[in-house]
Amino acid sequence: HGGRDQGAASRGGITRESDVVWAWSLELKKLLHEKNFDVELSRNETQSLPLAQRLSIIKNKKYDLIISLHANFILDPKVKGLEYFLPSPLNLEDQKLKMAHDEMQTQAEEQKAQVTVILQDLVSQAHQAQSFKLAEKLNQSWPGKIKQGPFDILEQSASPALLIELGFLSNPLDLKNLLDSQFRYENSVKLADVIAQDFKDLKRLKN
Image (cartoon, rainbow, N blue to C red; front, side, top):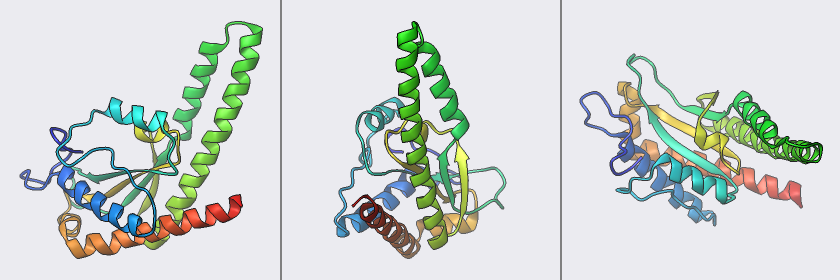
């Protein structure tokens, strides 16, 4: 979130999601840079970047990992906590079936489409497995809830992807924590450490 797209806001509109996730993104980027990771932000602080443009970026360029940071809001102020979201397998399956149906014009095309779907299915399964394992490790370091959601940013990514809801702007304690620089630093360190170790382990497996 940035520019005109300010996302959710706390009660009274004092705290905007765009400001919260920008601060957290910069913190995480800095920590990952210190661990020799290349990090790209999808936008700058004041830039408005429509969803279609963000989807174009993640579909056309392969990254080791996509992380989408958000701050949540719900009418019930008692609801709180961190949430890790993974792609929804059902929606991915629907997309694969539609693609297969569209491409099956002749027998030759049908065979080609089946091979394409199988290959894409294997890639999707690998990405989902990697995303899930990372979410489990992150959840052990900074406990929350692991969920699945039909988010375009997850399902259309050409890379492993996670959407992290850092907390609820509608909950007083979450809001206080999200704005606290020490809380942000300590938990960003946890995220960065787990991500770095996860990719070290993955690299060893590949070698």
